[in-house]
Length: 106
Image 1 (tube, rainbow, N blue to C red):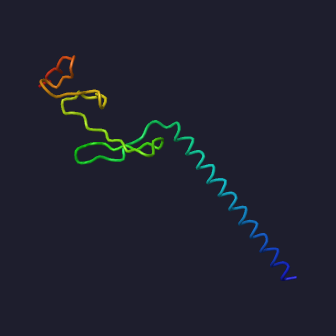
Image 2 (spheres, helix red, strand yellow):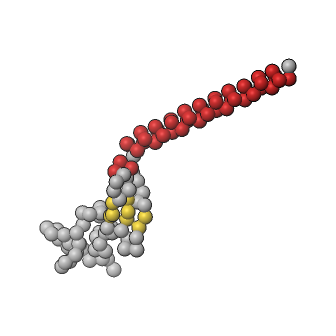
């Protein structure tokens, strides 16, 4: 009787372990599927970091083969100017076709 009780307990323990494995497998699959779905819809990311020249480095899950480099804004760019749209330099720091910015208030 002791052997049959021990076998029954062993079978229960093995079944519990299998059930636990199935639970964690389902959980892992659900988590992976959810993350994959989120990657398709998330549009806001943080840069990977900056170098000493203030270039920002970006990586996007949708484009796994590339790392993008965003150059810093020129010092003459007005506050809030979107990156890449302000091309300061030359005579007054104004892009072609635009008047120069007003002088800073003292």
